[in-house]
Structures are given as structure tokens and as C-alpha cells.
Amino acid sequence: MSNISWYTEQSAGVVSAPVPLSSPGPAGPPYLPNKTNSAHLEWDLYGGYRGRLATDSTFDLGAIRYLYPGAFENFGAYRRPNTTELYGAIGYKWLALKYSRAASIYTFGANDAKGASYVDLSANVPIRDGGFNLLLHAGRQTYPNRPNLQYFGNSGGNNSLYSYGDYKLGITKDWQGFTFGAAWTHAGTKATAPDGQTTVYLNAFGANIGGNRLALTITKAF
Image (tube, rainbow, N blue to C red; front, side, top):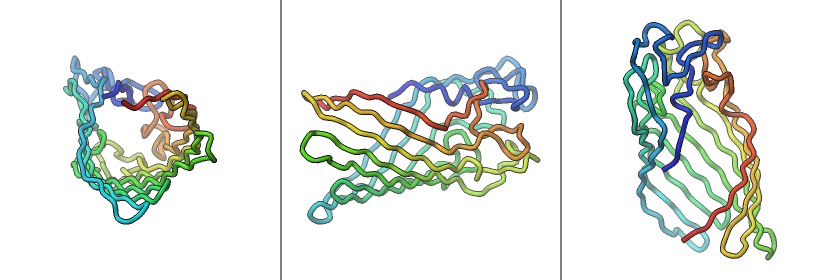
């Protein structure tokens, strides 16, 4: 479980007149007056089967259901964000390749997005014997090239605008049963459709939710 804000902070209006999806009444039709959306929690349920192919080689097959409990009274052109993904992964020593594909009709709130996929190539490279590990990652989220006219209309865009690449470079250190980490990430998310007004990954506060981030972590396994 994790707290989230991305869904209700999406813009139910346009760039020049943004309105959070949590209170879309002022955006006008197709949004309804006095109706709200509320989603502050992500709950991931997953299961699968992991095994060994050969020495130093592994495989992993499974499914993930992303749940967002809350109130969804005023979708407009959005949809309920609950999403189901199927995935398959293979690994060799410290290298892993994973492919995930959305099986639900709606993918994280986007209409007509069944079949959206994500490819993840990651490496966790040990650095000598000091307990340090180098983290490397490159991924590609791809949405099907479908019009989704209720949302994009005449903006010149379609669901393919939700596609993006993302990258990660980080380092971790194991010490006293804890793992300390620092990582830079970048997601090349598009802010708007070609009309410059229809938002894609630009939220109601004028921020592209992708871009560059720095994360500092402390983790412990029990």
C-alpha cells in the first residue's frame, strides 16, 4: 500500500483553465456539478510463480492488480484507475528483463487503453566486496495508438501520447542490516497534446509529473 495523489491532481480542464479532477464541477460538461473524485491510496495485489531455468538464470510469471479505493462520481473523459497487468521476467545473475501488459480495458484512468505495455531492463551490479551495488534501469511504457476521442477530441493527440521512456542511475550500500540508497530517475513524459491545451502528464498545478527526480532510501528486509 502507498499514498498517492496523481489521479485526483490530474487536470479536468485545460492548461489555461486547470481544475483538479478531485473537484471537476467548475470544468463544465461533461463533468457534473457537486460531484467529486477521491483516490488517495494505491493497493497492489500480486501473485505468481518464480523458478530457476539454469545456473544463475531465473524466470518469473505473474499478475498484478492495482487498486485505488475511493469515490469516483465524476469521470468526465477519465476512467476508474484500477488496472490489471500480466507480466513475465527472466534474469541472469544481476541482470533482469521484464515485460508487463495491461489486461484491463482501462489503464490507470485512460480509456480504451487495453494492451498498454511496459518493458523493463534493470541491473543490480555488485561493486567489489564493499557492500555497494550499482543500480541501472531503462524502461519503456507504450500505450496503443487509439484515438480516445472523448478525451483528446480535436487536439491532434491520441493515447500514444501517454507513452514514455524512463531511466534510473543509483547506488546502494548494505550496512548493519539496512540498505541505504540514492538514485536519479528521469521519465520523458509529455506535458500536453499538440494543441498545447489538452493535458497529458501536466497536472492541475502546472507540473509535469515526470522529469527528473532524486530519491534517498533506507530499507530493511524482515
